[in-house]
Image (cartoon, rainbow, N blue to C red; front, side, top):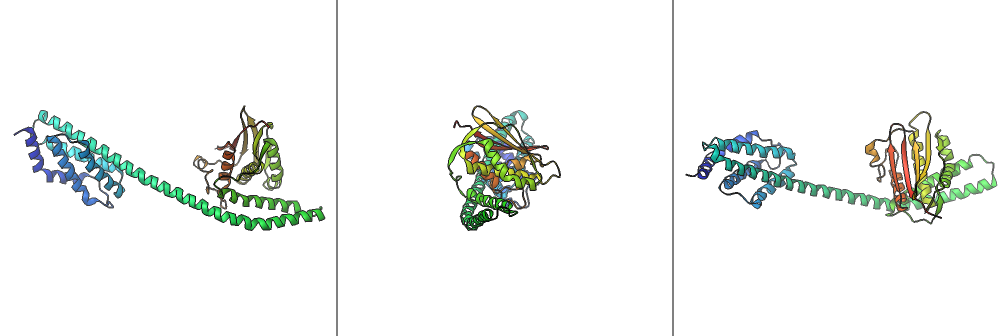
Length: 369
């Protein structure tokens, strides 16, 4: 009798002992949907061991069982580490049993090498299939989330269009009557404050219209001086700065000119200033916004910083995404709109934050007017 025949006979005689010993050592969750298949798969692997002793197996033969087991492990939602550990326990038990067969070590060595190759290939094919299926499931979830997100934006668009028109009509009337009262009663107190607050409300309402569009609304573009734009915004923001006890420090202005929409850039700067004022309300003193201008041969940079609380890194990675907000009553669309507008102008917007300052940087291409 050859060593091959003797080893096959030994394995046939001891299959129940092997399966029982392996079954006691492996890890199987009580929630495993395929508990009954585990032992059957062990038997099939045992059969592959016997076949590879007679003749090395093709990759396809190994892949069939590996793919079946991988799909079951995905459905059972088990830890892939537990699965690989169970496979290696089977490998060790098989080798331990054949070593005790009484066949000389020298004769067993080629069989042991083939068995190790079998288990290595099986593990590789199983993990590969497991990973592919898990990735497909993940992509399906991402696709579903993206689709749901698009549907939310579509619904938001439909709602905001109606919302904007419903609010803008009375706002226009209010602004008109304010101007009439300012003309008839120029010394009447608080009219300028009322007018400012109506402008702020109109600005907030407009945000929804911007967020609902696939692209930002195309407004008339012209050559603008960034320094002059910031001066206009700061003049408009003066009541809010005063109310929030916030002081503004400006660095030397550059004479940078950009080709842009005045209304859209104004909206970006207003958003960043309002966010800074809100953030600074969380500290008790020395509330400061710093504005710096820099430029190189092709790009103008505006740095708007505040000394409010630090924004955690994880939040910085998502603050420009729609609907993300840390404010109790925030909409989560302000910074998203800022990014859309700046990118539509060929620029970029970013944020850095540490214990001392939080800085938003806008980069825009310089244009020769």
